[in-house]
Length: 531
View 1 (cartoon, rainbow, N blue to C red):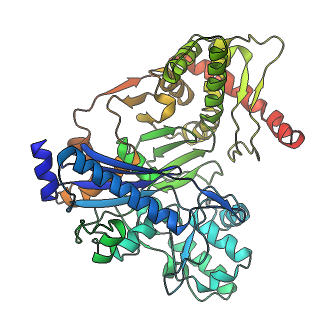
View 2: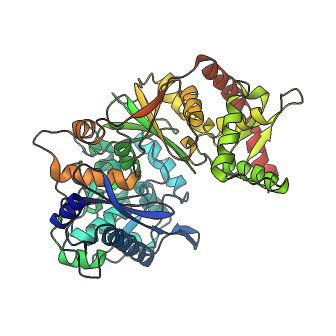
View 3: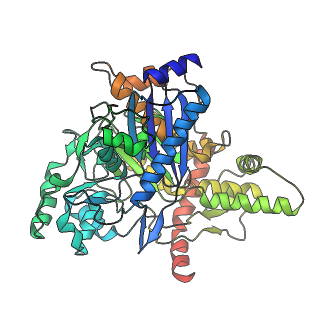
């Protein structure tokens, strides 16, 4: 405790703050990247005039509350007033649309990644670039605003993302980490800058529309992990900590997206490694050795925080429908006069799924609470489907629903692993699906036919990953790569449990997946017929 207290007073710490969809989280770590204090703030996006958004008041009030709770945690644990921090970094949910005029005014409410209204623009850009542009990317939002003839576009002088905005306000620097930049506009992984040819193509659009700027004029400067991203200004210090305790001059790491911080938090930035984050949504990030042979609608191409190419399979649905079924069984238990804790209920049902038949006995489930672009499902219609000959019992039912939570992910990963022949030496799983020992982990191994590791000492998630990047910014030695820093100074000695795929499970998942794909027209028909 004494050592930690001295480290805090000396400013030998790093702070990572991440804006998630439902929670803002702050994690303070020591020089060894061990968490020593944290704070959080719950928040929710609002649906205003057809747009999912958070107001600027939401952003700043939430950030200050989160920071104050972390500072209070420091005070209550160690009896110290937090004045100095060694380095700070900000992260947030991916991409979206924030644009500002020459007076730094936000021109339209922040449009989050959750908005799908830029899909027409994304399709046109994908065709123009011959490169997959998802609807949530910043460039798609900008082009959609142009297509919509929105009045504000002519006044845009700066476009950034949520963490880029907060970083700018606190440091005065209009910069962005390369991982997040790769979701603003396509990146050339050789130059580590916005893709030159595509910049020219988009500038042609801007010129034809008579707009007074070119795309590189308004985008933030790209930085890679470890770069100097500026320092906390006096004004920024008061914005973050209105009490006046926090001192200015703190170095900042390049702001990164939640995908990048997730890769750092799972030590998955090396080529031929990856991670799967499985919770409300699920996505896989696999670091590639080379470019793919062509563009795929199912695969987003982004980068690690150091600029290496990543194939990302992003799916909107994972555990929401599964959680609803667990809740239903919990209601039944209560009705029967049996009280079962939530964690015990999950364990009981997940372990039962292990005993189901390898292919789920012909039981088929679809977990589409919302739309899913990879399988071309426009709206959510969760379904359980079986034939009269299917072996319908609790074990097969739970196994089918667990398989369904990974069904879309497998569809996308099969393109990378089977069609493109991407090599995968190791993948790390994290998120709610893996809380029950072994089950989600072994089913993921079966889905992708690769070993899956879950760390015994799970980190603090993306906020912790951002704190690690902040420490790397100030601790890195000359020539020390982020890969080496993570291997030798962050994850050395950490234990994980690795499960290799079982051939019978792999074959069973393949049989399930074949039926799953064949049955997708049933879901599409349900979208048409059930309103």
